Length: 559
Image 1 (cartoon, rainbow, N blue to C red):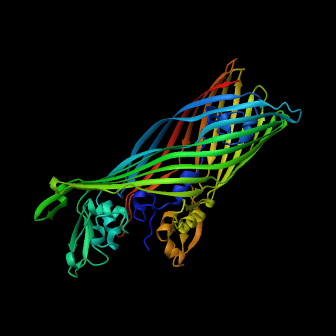
Image 2 (spheres, rainbow, N blue to C red):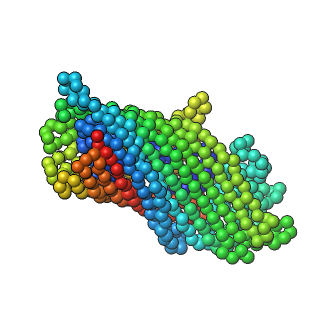
Image 3 (cartoon, rainbow, N blue to C red):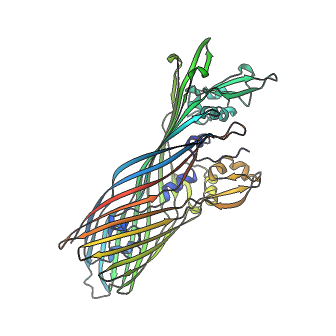
């Protein structure tokens, strides 16, 4: 069994073009609250505070705290900065990349009404608020020189289980072959050799490779010369929860709230690989009796998803004294409908342009259902009179309960993926803390901190090899039959944290304005560009670590 760490969609495409993974489920399910500038500046430690429209997605009871109605909108700016290192075995090459985006993380209206009932119910509220709960923004562009392996060589190795007639079928939907191999064959990234002696496992070579036949009839494939490799990955998308909120205030002491949440997101992901001959003369082949030299090759995977869902959330805030607040909330699992589309393209360029080739797959589409985990959060806050406040939150979410299911009347067997979800994902803990200091009646300073643990796990199997979720899916039949077993479980130490600061202004009238900046240290990415296929030679690994800086300004009116 060949043991690898798979973190790249380029490799996952060899498993199945439409494979839903643990990582898809986690990407769509996780929350990173953005909201208003005040909630962001306080580290989103809003469970016990409420009052701010950014708190509604955290604790629905927050809508009932204030005696006045509010209207807010919050334009924002996000900047993703990434440091990458490319290591092909001869020292790492480091680069820095960035991507930015303007967005609208918050817009909302909350109406508060007097109860006039003579009962303990003093006010009730109704709100319609959209708050961002995740920003996906990434731009990785890196590469370096390689003298031992190539992506095309790895593709040739992977295609060896399919015959040339299967790869040359001329159609995509009618083929049982993964589309990356069909594109690779049509785009001349790989080609077969050996003529009539080409039997299973079938012989293919990458456009970057040369072959030598041994006396016993076997062949050796090797990289014909040095190549410059380029890797790009771009991600974008913002998840927003549109919340219909109902709140009630009992005696200015106990507040309850209910959300009907409808998250939605458009998410895109593009991954690109390029390989260029340092000296094309090293890659000269006899094509149809004519010497032709390989110059460059490219491969690209483009993916997009449209996500929409629904959940309910119930929360409370209790004021046992005028200076103490305690809050809690619980959110049901979210039922998502996900529609994915993807396409693959690739091609090669030669010194004789008549041999250039390019292939593009159709754009395929697939829909399915995803159930994300329930969430629970508690918090406590101390109001320091005219000086300010301090607030602390804890939130828990168990991602091992994520489950895929079929959409509409289309049946798909998600047994393997759901098993991987339960094995390789677990509980994530989020600790949030914030403080606000009043500089007189109009101005405030704020600061916050958030720490989130990574829910992912890996294993060591019975052969003492490392196994992650992607590899478990790749060899699921072997694990299901008991040939391989998972022995020891290890939590992935890939936690994230953020720091935030902000200022607030409240006029004598109805207008108020807040501003905040948050710097989030993002989860570390380790991307193996392709499978190891040369004995004792590791394929290049890209390490990426970066930050996401978010700046918000909230404009609001009380009435």
